[in-house]
Length: 211
DNA sequence: CACCAGGCAAGTA
DNA sequence: TACTTGCATGGT
Image 1 (spheres, rainbow, N blue to C red):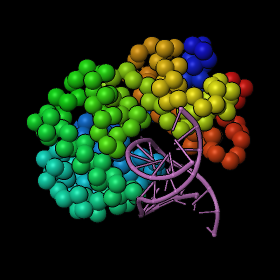
Image 2: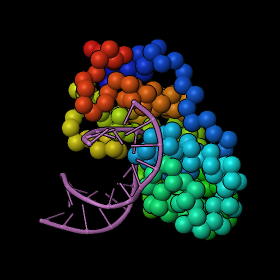
Image 3: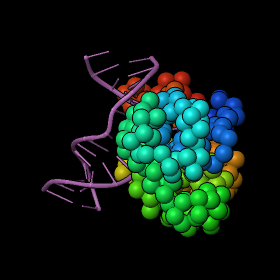
């Protein structure tokens, strides 16, 4: 499996080149973005982020003060805006109440504790937590997503019904714990999924052909 | 018109 | 435990 994963990474990197994923000014932008993009096209999430930025709302202080209903209005372009406003509020409330509004201090917890605390927040599941761990806290945690399942499944590299955690283990136990590499790999998998591994059509001229 | 996007929680059996 | 459903806008 180790060689297989490295081969996949090499092929995707050769095809797409280095991807500058999740360019953001700070950790809060990444965390909020991770919530806004849940089951949502990144373009729509990005619009909402730009709007928050433009209105000066992208800070722990501002987000803790704004009413949930007003927040939902500001992020409506990304869809699921009412539930996402609640989720952002839950996240911010956790930082304010347990870390004195200091996001950096929250993100400096050890990886296990940080992941568990993130998962304890309603609205943050395994993928969102791992995105925050990898892209904001810079921990060597592999982010699994729908495309990861779909692509590996389509190449018969995993069994049906494998869990998130088990699939994550496959990557983390067979690859060096490298933040930069994990960041690239997840991005490459998403780009591959969007281009070559849609639900309906079979992969065609996919860089992973015959893997 | 249908289908999907960088998920998650709550409800059901 | 293992499905199912609600959440919602905007692009193709």
